[in-house]
Image (cartoon, rainbow, N blue to C red; front, side, top):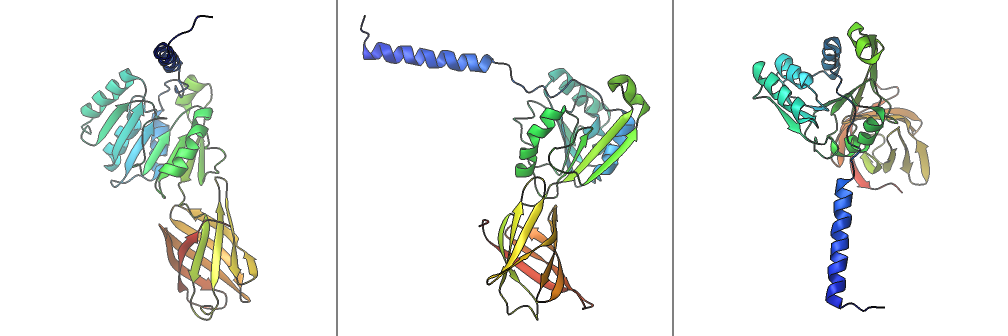
Length: 291
């Protein structure tokens, strides 16, 4: 067997790593999230209404095509918008359309891979992508978007995340494109991340008993329990929508219904006690991860 020097061995290994890296970089990416299918104008109308867009919003359209969604959001509501599109020809077409419509100062179009491009500053996200790409985006939506961000997905749900609303209708113009008039718009509001333990401060007559609440939160639902000493109480119908949290609790022989606003590691709101006419204030602070 012929021996090679240490320097030669290092050179061979280096060349092998470079070749492997080049081969990987030449592998096709699974990032073409669907063919270009322009959204019919009646659907654009209903989608923008469902998203409840205002001049304060920053709208991102993922796979923006000819740019009509963000252009119309800017024209009709004064919003700012960004379209992310892989095809450079469509990016150029959208930019030209924005200039022609007089909204080029409020919208921009980015040529790039929507799976690698940030949209974290969005307050509204719209998308019309094939199902497997829609579900690929769900973890990013939940982790990167601000609580309260609205998402509207055309025809395909963000499984397994249950929508907050759905809107279903028929559109004649869609049949020549997809073979069906049926359209479904799925609307979501990004919930605040509330999972973990929280220490509650309650009004009289409950203030003397220390109480903590532990929320379990995943993509599909929110659940939780309250603890007071050795006692454990299951929360009734807990829900988180945007920055708002609601839950019920049978505590001290009374039914308490809590509503509050989550702000980072604190919550403040009102609690309604059965048998009392007026709600009272309550607060909570984050105490750590779930047990």
